[in-house]
Length: 195
Ligand code: GLN
Image 1: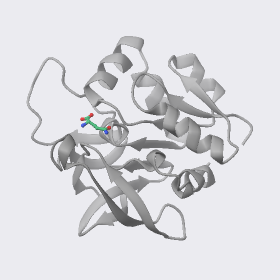
Image 2: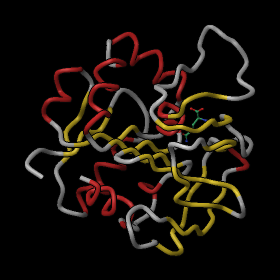
Image 3: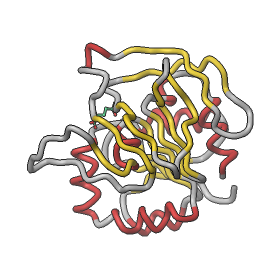
Image 4: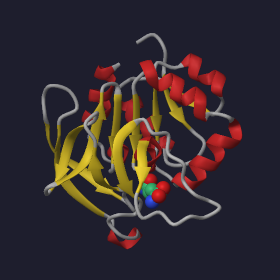
């Protein structure tokens, strides 16, 4: 890994990802402009607000550069980041501030599909990012997207109960929860191994 890991810092809780990689001794670099993608080996799209992420991404002209980057670099989206990576949304009301996902992961999600902020919860999940499964990861769900359909291109790599909560499609990983909010660095470590 001869370049830092990029963090999309348009909005959201990117600092927590910076800390998580920092604990693993891995350097990160803020990505806000297309040219900064040339300086990183991978990218994290953090949680936050997908409406705002959509608006800023399109205003800055990052959409196509991100799609090009994702062809041959690892990208991990957490919570709102998963929403940005999915192929489509269900039950979304049309509004001027709508979310326009990138369509990188073959799955459909429902925003806030587990309820509102007060319905946030933590649950132990097993996640199979690479070959070995990571057991009992304390997954924190905050106004999390619900993955309601997974297409043939993507693999489910974590479930909560019977429902998928993380998908992987080659070099792309989308999580409904927030691995950066726990001291458990195993998912960030596994992401580095995709790199
Ligand atoms: N509900 C937010 C959205 O729709 C995501 C919440 C989060 O990232 N914690 O974008």
